[in-house]
Length: 444
Image (tube, rainbow, N blue to C red; front, side, top):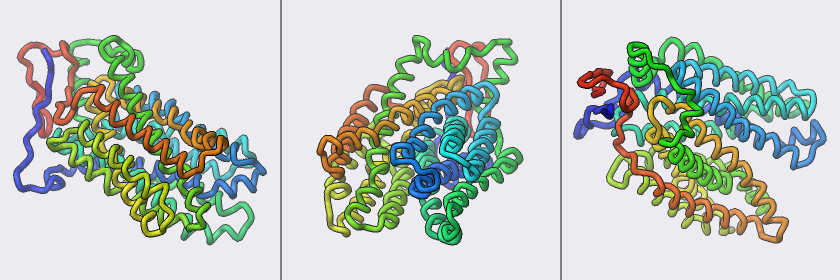
């Protein structure tokens, strides 16, 4: 018998944020803040690459490799933390991941060589991947189905807020220390220790996922043993889901890095100060993610919302990458942030809705970060196109268009998941007629 979770329907005329309990808000806040600081500690690197090149006398290829190794190692962290979240609960791996990436971000400030910094950024990537894999199911499993879209968008938009914080720190904090040779970039990394303050708060105030807790109670009561989560992903009934989700996230990542990685270089080549455009782009994402997530809770569903957003992002390419008018470029940055990167508003909820409770940590974690690892090739592809004589705006526009169309296609290879009810127990694991209640939901 299939086990489903029947959540309470929405209350007509009541704002969605009034429907969340304090417990649900705290689960949201723990994940949102962890992912926001994750975004800060990663994107701060993009502001200080020139300083690192000067300090360690390395070329642009080696400087760029600091970002690539972090993205690749996210896959390791996503798999490890996701598997741990499925086995021991979502909360502990989230806390350990935040602690991990904060420590290695801080230690990066004390690097005495490029090799040491490279190793520390690789280790940082493990924690970065773990926050998403453990935090997203923790937060979304607390929620009723009809609110997952908007909250998913708010959660994913936390990364953009982290970027904006990094930009503000670079503008306000960095100049205070940059007068001392090699100190400014080290201080920027040192700020990365701040997220450790989240860990005791999460431990004291954030509760474990009720869906995961119910599954554990049932497994203990029946004496069943868990299959290894990562192996479970590649069994016959789930391998199609795993591969489709990983392919979709790869297209998402190609789209994202086509938009953001070379954008500051494009602006500087045109003699434009990048900061305002970068802030507008990321503010557009921070606002667009929850807006499209909310839309995906309606008749369009996840697939329709992702498709429409991706195609609007493709349509924004002329304003974003090809226009040379400052005013039109600002409009393009806002449009690309809201729409082109708006697809990410549906990513957390779509991935968590595709996988059963037993692998809802490792499944989305693997798919998301496998996509990030493969997507890390995007900057190299655009660089190669430039070497072959393609102008940077055209190379960016071409990759954005290909990635956007790929997203709009790949999303339809999987089922619609809007309103899908999270299952606390896998099919066939529950005695006939048993009923389990949890806050705001009934598991039948």
